[in-house]
Structures are given as C-alpha cells and as structure tokens.
Image (cartoon, rainbow, N blue to C red; front, side, top):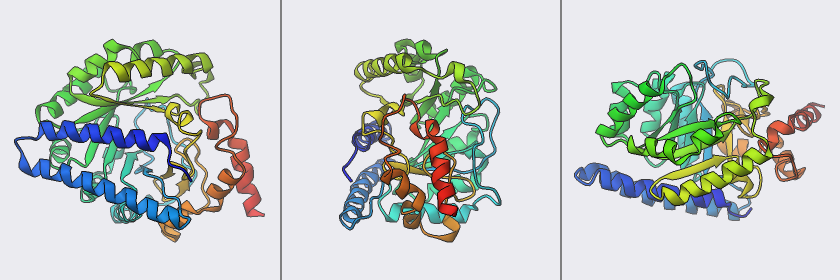
Length: 348
C-alpha cells in the first residue's frame, strides 16, 4: 500500500512541533535530549513500518485509543462503543502501547470519553517515550498534577477541546496560561458545524489561540450520530472550510492544522480500518474509526497485528467501502448499513 499524504503531513507537523519544543526547552538539556531522541525514534518507527510493508503487513502510523466511555456533556462524539464488559486496565493499555511501538506506530491519540479520567493509563503512556501521545481532553479535570506530568513527559501532547459548553473558554484559557507558563506545548480541537464555521476558521480565532501558546488546531467535521443533521456541514460548507484552513496554514506557518476528514479526502479517501489509522475502544475492540463502532476482534484475544488483519478491515478494503464515491463527510458513517451487513455475513 502506498504512503498517504496525511502521514507525510503528520511527519512534517511533528518536525515543526519538535523545533518549537527545542526552542522552548533550550535551557533544559534533559528536555532537549528527549526531543532529539524522539526524532530518532520516529525514523526507526518509519523503517519498522516499511519493513513490515515489504512482508505484506501494512501498519499505519497512527492509532486512536478511547480510554473510557465516560464522557462530559457537550461532547459531539458521544458514546458509540459497540463492545461492553470491563474496560481495559492500565497494564493492558501499556501492552497495547508497547505492541504499537514495536510495529512502528509512532502516534497514538488518547481520547474517550474523557481520557484524563484514566489517570493510571495516562501515566502508563508517559512511560512509552518513543511514541507521541496527543491527549484529547475537555479540560474540566486538567489540574496542576496533570500540568506537571505534561511538563515532565513531553511525549504527552494535550489537545484541549473548546466545544464543551460546560467548560467556559475563560476556564480553558486559564489552563492554557498555566501550561504556557511552564513551556508546555499544546493544541486545540474544534468540531466544525454549519453554525460555527465562520468563527472557528477565522484568523482572529486562531490568533487568539496562538497568543495563548496553542501550536496545533485539529478541525473535526461534525458527524450527526446524535441526530442533528441540521448542523452537519454540507458540501458548500466543506469547500469553504477547506479553503479557509489552507489560508490559515499559510498565515500561521508556525502552527499545525489538521482537518478530519478533510485531510483524508486529500490523501486517498477514508484512512480508517488500518489504511492510515484504526481505533481501539475502551473495552479492547478494534474498530475502523471512532465514528464507526463496529468490531469483530478484541485485543484481549489476540495481538495488535491480528487486529490489523481482522476480517472486517480486510472486507472494508476489499469491497472498496473506504475509497468509493460518497456525498462527503465521514464515509463509514454514511455507509454504516453496509458495514453492518459485512459483520452480519461474517456471522453466518
């Protein structure tokens, strides 16, 4: 399988973050040494993936892990986990992180629910220093202990959501200030709807975040899993958003901008189901994407490589579900009935 442009963009973005961290920690030799070591580890990870690819085993550079299904109100993603039972323990997650690093995955997104509710797992992630962990959090329980942890372990990269109406922007700005004061780099995540596109994609909005120390913005197109079709972006909104984000990339060259699924469309359609990433839910199930909560295997009964070779992932790729024409937005959500049909056929 060919490399995707999103992987290249992530690599370039990480290089920019590394340079910023080096500048921020120039007076702290220990921190600078870690960043230089991580750069070397990223190159080693790429070589591991290339080696496995030559053997017929495609490994994506990115893994998304939902540490818990407990969530604050105001979350657009909501709880769509298909599995049930007992959530993975900190040791089980540590095993997942180790396996991922072992096969060349160098980016592991930690999400939820609210991932900071799993303090034990966040501490486990801090120990896996050859992996960069963007931690997507609502920020409501981002306390001094976490700020200190992020300061000491730069492989943890907090990304604060500014969607949750229960957490005011003033409160989030205070938390940003605490991290900026300690030289902790962080990002912000925004769910884009018809109602907020003009605001969140404006130079004024990004400039405000930049002045408070934010170095990355992740724009996620709203997927109407909760039934709010009326606020989901249409094709005109998507085109406008893409053009504005392109302008932001030019204007704010010292920041990283990622658009989902916008960057996917520019990279060869949907990158889920192992093409560019896949998702492990709080109970260990392997899913194509957080917005496609369907699973036919679990990390408790196999290895990470087994999950990448799951029948569901193979069928989604074989049948062209990820790459065919669709109206836009999340293709797996739009074709959820087809995904369900594939799973049903497997049970026969």
